[in-house]
Image (cartoon, rainbow, N blue to C red):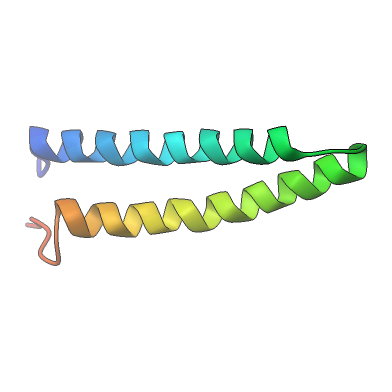
Amino acid sequence: KFQSPQDYLFSGIKTIAMATFVVLVGCYYGYRVRGGPVEVGTATARAMIVNLIGIHVIGIIGSQLFWGGVPRLP
């Protein structure tokens, strides 16, 4: 009721940006890992931390870019 088609488009763009970021970070850390299970676990933990920070940054920047400081709330 309170969302426009433009809101759905902007949310989709943010989702695609976040998903692409997560995949690229996972691939980067996955391809760079050398050694055994300990190194795989370390790379996974690093990728997870980078993804958590990156998703929040993308969310904040996307919200400010698309909706600004004044969202259309009832």
